[in-house]
Image (tube, rainbow, N blue to C red; front, side, top):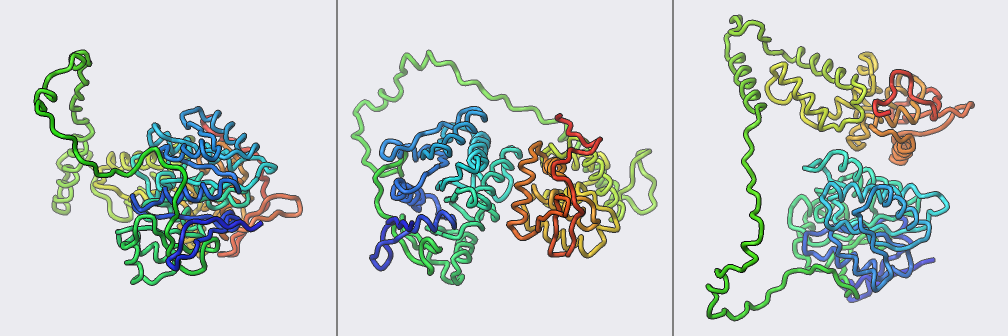
Length: 509
């Protein structure tokens, strides 16, 4: 059934139509600076389509709860346990009820965890409940950031994984993602890339204008028009909107947000006794407990240690060649070859720890840097991105002969196309294919990612296959085989349900 909803008017004063059925299959990305009218656009879309399709809104600020009175959405407060959120999400899909998940009042880490739990539960619903759902995520850069920030690594990974599932694999399960972001540069590329429909609003930064122009297939010189767009005006493109870039002005809405843009209003007349009014104390002033003063923390001892280490390295580097060390037992600086050997050995020690798979990359990176300081290495031997890739290589178990092969170099270039958290899994599979080892089981893949859920491991394989990186098939005995078309290699047959080999049981169990 074809259903067109009215989003407003075009520059030719015609109705701007959006094909809901096409949207469900192709997803939508909305971009615009704060104040450009993104929330107004989402509200118009939700109101116009409310009677045609089930809706789930992930609402960081609680602005969309007003849909409940006018359109029957239920409001789900995210300040609940994980089990409660999963149960509610399952029943939402089962009974086809539209809802608003309000994250208002939660810290950013808790917002990310709650959104990830709810979205994953929608994604994991039983096949019989895979009815079409429009999943609208406002401020999507919070849940799918392009880079790590000051949030907990586990929260970032959980939210990014949930958003990736929604945009990359949600269509088969009836989930159609509609994501809105203030800046494309802040949004993870693998999440943004899955949208086929775009509504680009006002933006001022060159990098965002250039990326918006690229997504719309416009010339870079045409990108300047994004600066001139008025509030509520967008450039639309996509199979559900228009086959060519089209200027659209969003129409009015029936409901309003609880918060609104600030408006100028005249100041009240100044009272004659304004000083007495302000400076005369109220009895409650003396009843309030004094706010605790935050003591200035003493500097950590590690700061002094790092300074001493840096000075020691500096003295060491300034000494003439052949000079005897001033302090007995002090190690000389390493050359490039020794540094590389130290990096390889240190990464091997880190990955050999039974709990390393279940520690965040940031924790392991700090461990790596501390080992370097103990070896009196000045600065960071590897950047964070380099460390993640080298860590993924170390976890793959590749030997020197395999690492020198052309197939492995191709695998490394392909690994850069997947998210950082999945590089270790991808390279483990690639190494098994190059050496013709049996395909790792779901339990081994889950452990390589840092989870105890074999079900998630199967999702990773499906996602790799959807990206065209691997081909999954089975041998005559029904054992799983993973093939890599880009370097013409495949694993031997492996039992997907096999338990972890002895000696590799997770520490948490």
